[in-house]
Image (cartoon, rainbow, N blue to C red):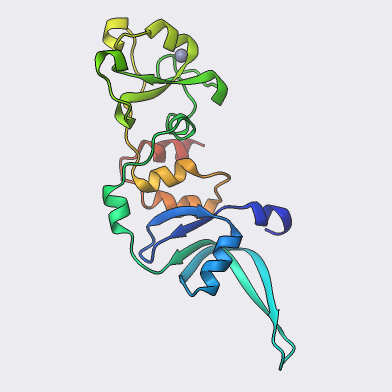
Length: 198
Ligand SMILES: [Zn+2]
């Protein structure tokens, strides 16, 4: 990969144990290299960055930037304690851009966040109480629970683990990054099924 694509390609940053932390761009990766925070890299070489010229030898330093960069330190706490922030883009990706009631596929703009137990009935705004819903189904359901509205969910809503969340937040994920991320998913992750199908 070279040129513009490589510059815009998000890089997966992990901790030293390989736990996914975040997506970064190459500028941040370069900074991590030069501040000696990179423990090792894996995946494919995305691009080569040219540095300064050595005054004595006249050779220019180069730095290969890989698609996965592991940095020093361990972020075990991040993975154990963090409830990933709930937002519509990530929620709709969790549900595969399907309405969880009628099962049809929709664009982002035609989906809404449905509270399974409605807020007016004490339902919370948490991962396990929200699903992607088309506007029509959301209107039909109104302020009722699925039972009250005689509607059925096509999948059980789940709170993503941190690795799943990083996957859901990813844009244009490369094959090697995907393999790396999915290795950190729980064995029963519904996202693994979907990856296998796509
Ligand atoms: Zn629907």
